[in-house]
Length: 537
Image (cartoon, rainbow, N blue to C red; front, side, top):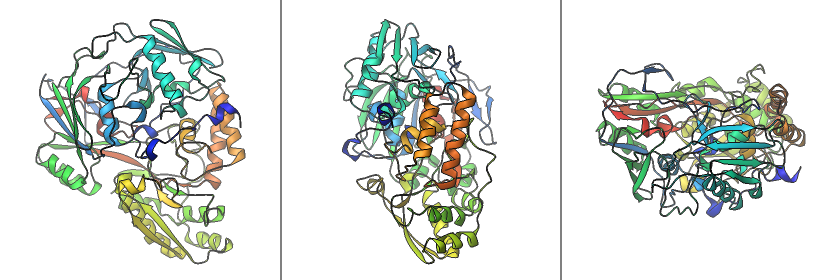
């Protein structure tokens, strides 16, 4: 493996930082070398309809002013306002208000320019050029310049922050200021999907001399007060490049208990909440003045099997466990039907996704035969899970345990809290679950399945697969790259350590008094935390 590829995923996890990483799963659509200037999306006023994922233009008049209160999944005293270290859901909800990136993702999962006026690549994608929009200012009134861009990415790489794995081929010295508005990213090797790294929220731009204790950004809101583990409050920033937010103030409040979060919403203590429990969807829909926000996404909660530990070091056991699952039953019971069946491969929106491979279905007899051949005619395993993984995860674990009995597998479900699951033992669990938001294949491989990836939960290592992935990173031709991705995904389908049983819908909710929040295909909660688009009606 080349030195450059080794850099993908070589990250120090400071203080065993939780893998409850919001942006860990967020990537962009496949970047073509023919990108040319990527036009920034124009803002529009939309609202949800009853159908999942649909949006329509609203005729409701947008009121200016008001204090918006949003309830989200609780974090801890380790919450941060540093985008390069944002891990928990609160972190990422907070940094989305304070900062912005050169590029980002639209709600329909398309790359778009943000602070960049244009982003272009040379012929072989070994150099990418970003030119800033004119007139951008930080919250303190200073202009946003190329110096800030250079500082941001040199900081990400030199301090090995969480966005570094998404920038393969780039070194600090390869980030070059051309003029006050232009930066070149000179890579050590071609990287056809470099633009996806620019779209990561880990890589949002911060000013020269950035101090997370006194954060200055150029996002839609300015910081008023930060109480880690409790809440963060903001005031609208009139100079935001997309226009001032409609609301005057924003409070993002953390709830460790999901029932408390739902109750706060139904009692109108907060105007919107993230991560609605599936069992509460009907309750919210039946409550006047309260609406469900549902997005069909490529987000997923896999069962993870360590391929370097018994019994999963035997590929026959991994194959058997994939055959144990009745996927539709699990979607119906764990997600209350709010999801769609997976086929043990991630990145379903990637153009290289092998959608024509046979859909894996439950086959108990074949599973028993494989287990017997592997010497595990009777097998007992522990499945580690946590509510911190997301809605439906614990229920899915319980469904698996019931389904496994038919194959002679005794599965003990060990439910632990967030601090335990994503603590010192995280990445050591032999059989567990986890979550990822929508990503395309190579971005996912960079942070989740390459041997040196920061979150290689299954300890996956396969030389044939790795060669395909490394070649795909270097391949500019879309058709050829998609062929390589297809071949790599097929290998994971045949012998990987991930049991990907579904892709789940993101279920949030908002008051009927609020408009402007729309479903986000990435799976990011509450319409991607785009609260600058929200307004009272």
